[in-house]
Length: 204
Image (cartoon, rainbow, N blue to C red; front, side, top):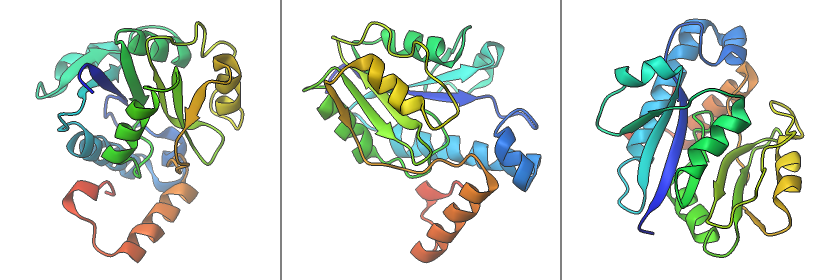
């Protein structure tokens, strides 16, 4: 998979500026801790693979210089979410993009996404809330994949799939952590699994 790139979208970890919906239910400090731990866990779990290059795309742009230089860091730039995502994906011949809201993402999921891009132009990882936790494009990518997408709601995946046409691949469905209910459900799942391994420690 030489030349494949994983792009991780992340917001600078600042109190009151991250995971605002989650903060309404568990408090701003706990939400910040979760965000920091989740970014660190994803970088440990996915950023060390030799099967792809990992790039961290951050916002606000001026915060890019403050991130550790053990990984490639770029500012997301201006525009709405779709514009920023498309710009990040267009930099690379084959790329997949994820956010930092889904603790369940594993290296095997990223490998599956790149394998799918060997067959189809676009790949998605659906989320339980109607959005998606992963999007990826190959060289023959859709022209306007994010045009008119209704973000932050149950139609985001359906809208994007409609823009991309029939030749897409869909990975396994995962749950993101946007609300206190999502957070509690994650805690229950981890309690059932037993003590977290170091690479899974995304809870504050």
